[in-house]
Length: 231
Image 1 (cartoon, helix red, strand yellow):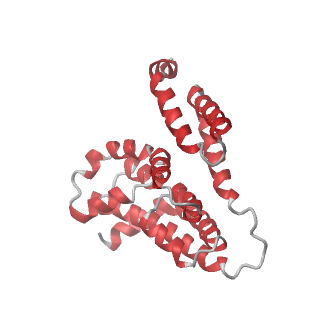
Image 2 (cartoon, one colour):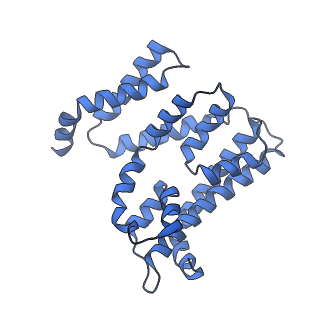
């Protein structure tokens, strides 16, 4: 990858720079005030690079070890990346070696959006351009998380309730999808199954039954939902 590719990719990633620095900063502060040293969010950002899962990891690290719940919830939260990967097969097949592996690892929503819709400028290798986009976005998240981890140790204001940022983030994602979709059957199914499992299993054990329940109901109703989406 060349400096020319980085220079060409940077303008496309400027909006992501602003968003990732802020969210990463929040994540780093949350990790710090939860009792973890400043370098924990840096390591998490480098090795996981999945914002929603990294926020969830804070609670996982503070709770009794439950690998099954962590695996299933991570799979459900990031299942959309399966479809991202399928969509990028043609674009990635010409990229070789470690560069391809990094593109697979670093495919977040924002990198996918740019790399799928934007062609490399003339004179710049396509693989180099996509790698530059991915590296820049990854570095923004790492930088924000590191700054949050460092600044969190010197903050003097009350950070109580900061952990609610994860809940609010998922609420915003849900509302955004709700407003975009004309057919909200899937959203209603998710809401109703979640509410039922919360009542049946309690707040500490409802996540896995909810994920299984939503998957089962959507599988059973896939055809009628698809027909309604197409109408």
